[in-house]
Amino acid sequence: MWQLYAGAWKGVAILSTPSRIAAAAEPFRLQPEYGHEDLWAGNVRYVDLLKERLRVSMLHRFWYKHAAFSWEREFRLAISLRTAEEFGVAVPAEGIKVQFEVPQLVHRIFIGPSLPPSDEQAVREAAEAIGLGKYIRTSSMLGTPRYT
Image (tube, rainbow, N blue to C red; front, top):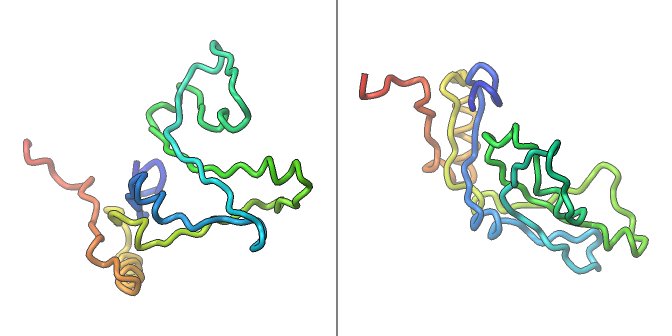
C-alpha cells in the first residue's frame, strides 16, 4: 500500500476506526441556522458492474464499486445534500468540508518506511503539538521478517 499510494514508500497514514470517525465528526450545516446534515458511513460493496444491474437509490449507489477494486476494502463517508437542493438551498459547487476533531479521530499514525528524516521530524512535531505523539509508529514494511 505504501508503494501504491505514497510513491517510493514516502508518506504518512492515519489509522482510525468507524466508532472514532463517528465520534470525531462535527455536525455539518450548510448554513449556521440550518439543521445538521446526516453523515453516512459504511463499507463499500464490490460487484461485477458489467453483469449486475444496481437497483438502488442515488445515495446507495455511492456504496458500490466494481469488483476489480475489491482488494481496496474501502470505507466511505457521505453527506447527502439532495434535500437541501430540492428546497433551493445553494450547495457549493466545489464541495463541502466536514470538520473532524483530529485527536478523537486518530488511533495510530504510521510513518512511511522511506520518509526523509526532515519530513519524519515535521510529522512528529505536528503530532506532539496536538497531543498525538504517543500514537506515532514507523512502518515496518521494509523490515526483515522473523521467519527468514
